[in-house]
Length: 212
Ligand code: PRP
Ligand code: MG
Image 1 (cartoon, rainbow, N blue to C red):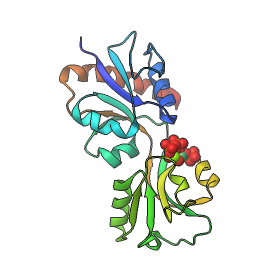
Image 2 (image 1 turned 30 degrees about the horizontal axis):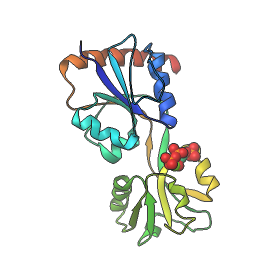
Image 3 (image 1 turned 60 degrees about the vertical axis):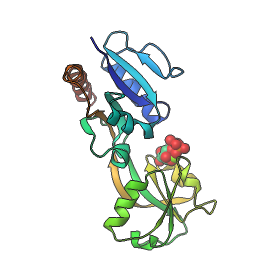
């Protein structure tokens, strides 16, 4: 029987929750995170540990069949990808934040300003909806440092507890979208593999019910 290939975040907060749900649905994975690929012992499943931002393209290309990924990453890079299941964990929001001392009434205040972000498409959609022109600086991590080093006037990044904003003297001023982890499906998934997906989904649904 062919195996279903699932992508999970290689490291970071989503990784722990992803491995936990796989465990909770009774799938035991053979190795730790040192290898980039692992097989399940008791289920036709292979796990690939990948960078978050790369996962939408792997799904589109059919290199992986499934992924546990933040909805926010799909909105940024894979709007046409099917979501089989919302998973209810790793909740966060994508927010605009500015230095605590900056006066801010609305997004219009960022007209002509510089915004540092790892989510350029998401921010651009929000700016367009509001008829605002701003300059985006794309950075892949530690976005919250940008205003402090003079790189940007504002940032757009994910906020969970809010502690990273707080530590960097920033305040959240607009929330663009809410996100949680989802089970995403490759558009190239075969019928044969969909049967395995259905089994996984059935198990996930009962685990999520039990968590409520
Ligand atoms: C993520 C995200 C925010 C922070 C939000 O960064 O980019 O910076 O977590 O969480 P909080 O509101 O609970 O502080 P992460 O620590 O994963 O590092 P990175 O941005 O460098 O990838
Ligand atoms: Mg960060």
